[in-house]
Amino acid sequence: MDKRRQRTREAIEAAFVELIDEQGYARTTVQDILERSGVGRATFYAQFHGKDDLLEAQVCALCDHALDMGAATSVSPLAQTERVLENLLDRRGGLHAFIVDEGSERFADCLRHAIVARADAAVPACPRGATARMNRSFLLHHIAASFVGMVRWWAWNDFAATPHDLATDYLNAILPLFGESAPVE
Image (cartoon, rainbow, N blue to C red; front, side, top):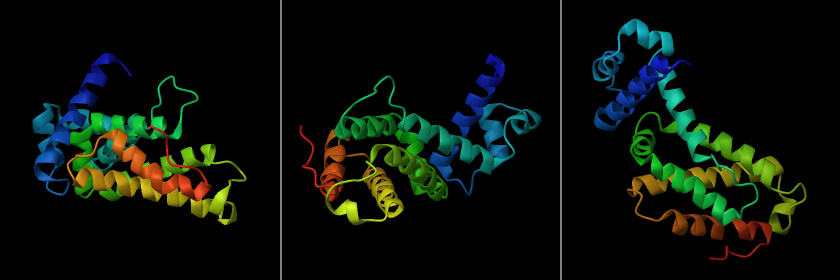
């Protein structure tokens, strides 16, 4: 994508997140986005099919950012979970808007699917503890749903907990299922 097109897309996305935070998704119109971003209608529709498409792109970008582990290859579950939460905190304005408004289910679905894929790669084929007797698909979805629920709780409480404390609490709830101890500080 050329630089001009990228700047246009960024202006549209920034205007969209601001508007959702101010007035909610349902009350935000494409016209509002055009006026806030300074972009013409044809230019907008060259980038997005509509408001729903823009929402989907924003949610996916937020999830991708959250799950970006950078160059880290082998880090502890605590460090991984904390990193995801720090990445979400970086985008707390947009995250809060997506969690408390009509986009919340799309955000939750996107994050849940991404966490299921991550968990599938991380959870051993033959886990220990109570999880050894569980249906694998159920286990992966339980891990993801718990994570999404934790993120929603965090946003509803204005991100008061630190990423470290929240990651520790989450793993204190999840790791015992695998017969593992709580994370080490």
